Image 1: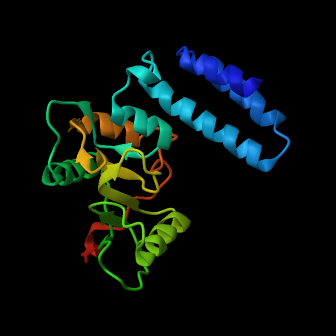
Image 2 (image 1 turned 120 degrees about the horizontal axis):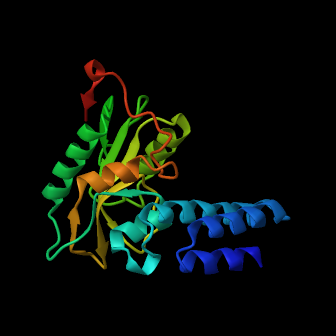
Length: 209
């Protein structure tokens, strides 16, 4: 009942009331899996609150994707044409500069080797069948340092990344424009996936592979 109440409040744009209802549901959860599901609802509600007073249906595809997944998106603003991959890569560099992120080692998903000091794992799209990608992603999350980035990501695909450039639907890029200022705000949200990450090593230790 409390979860349903929370969703009704959230749909109405009453984010604080929704969060209170979900917190009550989390306290009343009888099993760990139930509590985990409610905690996801709380994270979703808190991220959605970053766009108040707008409601979920009033957000762009990019903004809605961040609220649902916690992965920061660079191209979140509606536009007439989709950006290119080069546009998104340049926007990511600008975002990293504005956030003062310094990556000690830059790795591409095509490399198959043992990685010991991970900071930035980047791919054009998530290489789902790559064992090396999965291993590197696990290392980054266990270490709490660095970020997992893709230039493109399917909007209906589970978000196993921390930051994306733009969204696609059935392989077609969506007409969303890079918005660095908005991405900086999203990256600083306490419920973003990068919120508690240490971003890289000292500048003099930077390596590129």
